[in-house]
Length: 375
Ligand code: GLU
Image (tube, rainbow, N blue to C red; front, side, top):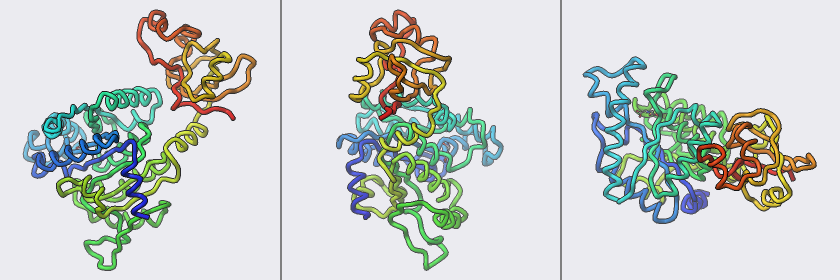
């Protein structure tokens, strides 16, 4: 079973790698040699044709020394420490990737960004563009504007949301433990390592609770990792929880290193379809011509040129029904234009859209990834 999971990781098209504060920083300084080895690992994946997005914690750990001798406790102190530490974090990561000739790009997100469809469309398009341009996107929570208490472990969940957003097929959580155990291995001799989880149950949460309790500060512990794995599993993405403290941790994993593999229940494409079916309540209708219907059925995105008229009022990011000229439902999708702009560009060729709107919008009104067809 593990061998099969390892094969799927080798075959993954898109991988999100999350690194925790304890791996990135030690005594308030970046672990540069380790970061260098990680950058080499990620570059090797990219050379093998895999897209990699890095989610990195460590801003607070690197910035807090500059704030004063005391550990930041209040929310605003943590936010200030993160603001001080984020450039230090990116500097260390940039040095590591410069040695690989790979450009890095910073994207600071909040969890809400991954939950709000309108922002989500933009964030995903930006990440896709960065990957297409050969850059390594490096994501952290936008701690200085986050409105909730900043907790260690938040980035586990953020990484899972990012994996879901970009349709990743693998999420690697590099941690200070090599996976999930039946009990805390540090205190219980009977504790057994769990190699593969097909279905996450409450029993797994109970196991993780112990380890979470015993985990050092700086690690979100196992509970947040399982929460992340649940999000990923529902998105058709495999999660791998493995030890990341040693040099070249991704290469070690791919070489057969010990890990807990949480398997997805379906492919990312199928999961997206299920999600779209369950979540899209149309707020308006986009009527399309016969050519567009054929194109959509052939797997294309819905372009403005195929739109005949718009009904209802909706904002960008809303769900819309797509109907043919006789009113038959063709499908549903997430619109990249609000109803007013959509009406203005209905029937226009792509190059006329910018002239009409005065800005360059998305090429597709509904991207094929955000679309389900009625069969
Ligand atoms: N965003 C926080 C930081 O960069 C870390 C959150 C986490 O550890 O999950 O320090």
